[in-house]
Amino acid sequence: MALRSVSKFLPWREPKVFSGYNSINQLVPFLVENDLHRLLVVTDKGISKIGLMSNLLEQMKDKQIAAFIYDDTVPNPTITNIEESYTMYKENQCQAIIAFGGGSPIDCAKAVLAKLAKPNQSIANMRGLMKIRKRESFLIAVPTTAGTGSEATLAAVISDPSNQEKYPLMDPVLIPDVAVLDPLLTKNLPPHLTATTGMDALTHAIEVYIGNNMTNETREASRKAIQLVFENIYIAYKDGSNLEARKNMLEASYLAGFAFTRSYVGNVHAIAHTLGAFYNTPHGLANAIILPHVLQYYREIVYERLAELSDLIKVSEQTEPIDEKANRFIKEIKRLNQRMELPDHLPEIRDEDLPQMIARAHREANPLYPVPKVFTKKDFEQVYKMIRG
Image (cartoon, rainbow, N blue to C red; front, side, top):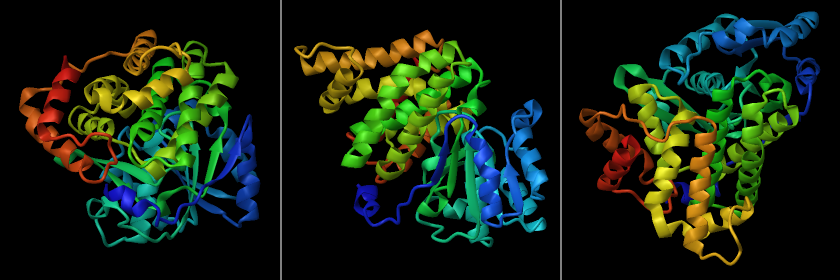
């Protein structure tokens, strides 16, 4: 696979991590220490409305650090979002970016990094792997959801509504410099978003584990993430004030992000991106629905590794055959979706959209993704129909 052949040569690095309760309070001293006094803050209207950044902004003001807030980011950030926030950065002579929110503000901020590096190129021309290769700013990611893992990854996923396209930019220069994992910032996340973002993290970790680019390091990270999700997601869903579950879900999200940015994802994501582009289906929800269908379609190709995961989360007996263990694991994913009231199909998929969606998913997945089974266009068609129900 293309990614496997180049990944060992990429300049990997990890963000500096501030984690734990009230870890957001470590950020302003860090800014002062590093002489960062003019920052673009990329967020969304929901974050602004509930005042989740108020404490951070007050601390910045006390230290005479200027914050220029761009809060028009939409779910599945668009070219317009990127251009507007880039303009705000340039006009205010910012030194760094704080991405505060879920995956969408973080991805938008990453795309601003790309635009700063190559201001004369369109975002579309930077799609794919290693098209940026330099950085002109500093990025701090403060996730308020536990799912995308974008605070640990080299990827930003961008939407272009004018072309009904959704595609990734992938370059190690997009890995944030700092990640703040404060469970208090996720405390008020609604149950549905807790569920869908958590299933996004689970999908990342599982696609790493069944893929052909797994290393010892990403194997352990993905196993730990899967275990943490199964142990904590439903607790966080039912009781958002359970800070231990929230902390564990943030760790799971980060570990899954760390794993997939090095070993990458697969056919589930290729399909999910088309659903986001055509129907604006939230990415985590799309992954939650698609994941069991794709695992079922792979069948015996992934049975051995799914059996290992079945043992990991203790839903099977050691003496059971491998195929039964694997199917138990798939059923446990479905059960988790049902308990959190997530749908198991997407009936809105239209026949007239299928040819273009199939072509795009096929183009995205091949030859980049290190999948256990390379899907033909016919395979994609059959899986889309399974998902539609």
